[in-house]
Length: 479
Image 1 (tube, rainbow, N blue to C red):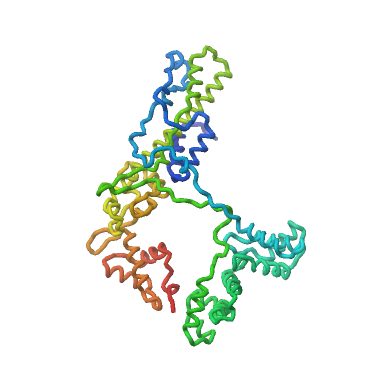
Image 2: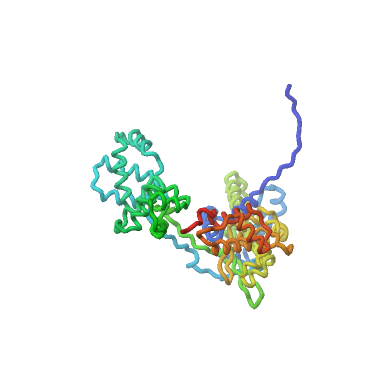
């Protein structure tokens, strides 16, 4: 038997203002302008420009205020907020800064289709060629099984073909530019590029092709001794020169372009300057757009306040005006709150890493995690994370993402904590200086780091090595 009962619970929900703030906080400076433009187009109650001193609404009459709690107090939306608390870099309207250059390129697919048009193919062959080109991925490889492509042609275009015809047309496509395009695997990609060499009689090219054709697995594992033995080569220089030639080939002939390319220019969110030993933080002026509530919309509401007509149509109009004024005020407040949060976070980071920012010496970077900054500015860790993951600062020694300054702490023999970045730099130096014919294993790297005073485990060495994109010892081996 079902029973009816009452339960009481607490739930935490984000207000529209909080949601607006979170979305605005995590976008970088370059995207903020676009976001502001979108809001200006969507909300006629929002305008560009500073608020004027006389843009203050008349107060509600006591009777109107009591009549409806839904009526808007325009005074709340037109109060003059002070921007003087923020130090901006390059204040002023610079039209040139509003446009971000975009580099436009044709897609890989378009380039290949253009080249297909130069072949003397009939309509049937052209359709097969277009199907093959459409199956080529952005890195230049065609990983879809040819049998599946044959089935696609039969079902979608009513073209009956076989593997021999498809491979014949694929072979033609594999002679397109860029070299190596249309390969089905890395081995085929590298061989296609070697075939383009005009000096195929050259010993290096000949040996390189033999290595790829007969010893590809040994090549990927850098088992050079096995390669020499299998190919019956006694002169080590032959193999060394051939492998060097293979390394110069492009493993991703298609690049990473899958469409129109937008060239992103790194725009710093902060400008940090050293003024005779005093560090000064400036917020990029693009983070402080001048926005105001529309005067015409505020006057529209004032007209309602003075009107004696209370018909339904007029009330609907006022409701619409109120909604737009609400949204405009919320957006302006979110922008200002974004500025405050950015500056507070950056100031805390600079104070924490003050010695580093004075000289740019990485050895002076202190271990710092998100919680350290969150405690300083009395905000949640997730808020600091949103700032650190998408913002950058311009210093006298380069532009750095804020997450660059966050790192774990590693204990030393002296009992002090040093930044994991310092340990990574030391690890990289050791690997750079190693004998490449006998590269150091992670165990040996661990011992060398401990000898330098860094108490670090082997698994941590492996983790840092992978973060530095350094392969294992076997793959670092050279002749």
